Image (cartoon, rainbow, N blue to C red):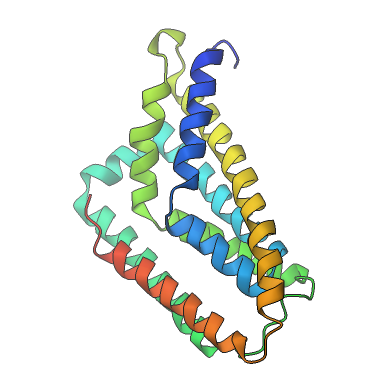
Length: 211
C-alpha cells in the first residue's frame, strides 16, 4: 500500500486531517460533552464509535455509494432527518437523566458499549460526513497508482487513526476537568442541561443542512 500513496502526500494528508479534526464541529463537541459529564473512558468509548463510523463513510465513498447519496435528494433527506431525530432523542434523554453524575466511577462495559454504539449512530446518520469524505479523499488519490478504491480506503483508515488519537487525548483532558467540576453540589443537572442544549443545536443544524 506504500506504493499507492507517496510519503510526502501522506504527510500532507495527515496534517490536513488533523487540522480538520481539531476544528469545532459535532463530533468533537459530542466527545467533549460525554467526557465532561461521564468521564474520560466514556469519551474514549464515544470517540471509538465515531471513528468506527468513519469506516462506513470511507467504504461508501470508495464504492460510490456516497455519490449516489449526493445525487439522490430523497436519500439525503431521509438520512439527514434520521440523524437529526436521533440527536434530539439524545437531548431528551439528557434532560431525563438524574442530576447526580458519577464521573469518578469507572464506566461499566455495558455503558461503554452503549456510548460506542451511540458514536457510530451519530456519525453514520450524518450525511454531511459522507459528502465530506466523498469530496476530501479523492483530493489525495493518485490516479496513476491505480486501485482508486484501495487508496481511498487506506486514506480513510489513516484519517480514522489520527482522529481517534486526537479525540482520545481530548477525552482524557476533558474527563480530568469533568471529574473536578462534578464534585460541586448540584452541578449535575446543569451539565445535563448543557448536554441537551448541545445535542439540540447539532440536531437542528443537521436538519437544516443543505447539500
